[in-house]
Image (cartoon, rainbow, N blue to C red):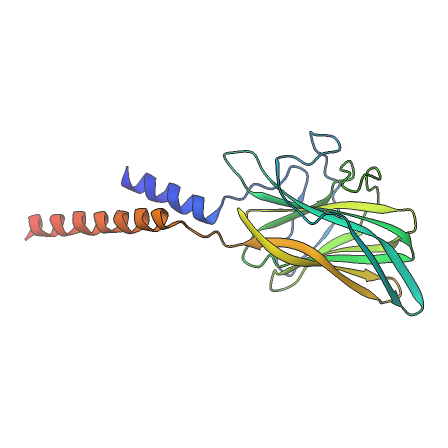
Length: 222
């Protein structure tokens, strides 16, 4: 019983991987071809909304090309018992071109990626653009969606990063234009869960109980 309790506590702290159906696993230092992820909720992500950047307008210039548009990121928690987090973002371009969108930091967590084209976050309809591929930095921190056929004016894309994390914190999303200009917007990332005082006590008391049982066995053998 003690072993089962301790395993349950550690699982609650560390989280259990539960990739969103249809996404493709993306390990640190790797690149994968894009996957189109379908949800059972139509235009809505699966789970419960836990964080939202709201609509963010952007404008930047690179090599004489001005790129403008809007982006929104939301975080959804998967239904119990997994309660892992999925990070969705939709970008819509009104002028210029977008070559890549980057998000982080996801170090020390499992990630699985895809394009969730049915989902609409901006109220402008689904984001139908498809990245050519996704890549993750060697450290595992940054996940990038690369559009070799850039997102142009009037186009958009909805992408998702499914994780085994159970907590999140503020972070950034980077946008890279075809002309080389960049823009940084508000975003979210996974974060190590903070165990409550009671949880630390439970772990400590459990280890103490194991030590007590060990001493009793040693006395019987002596």
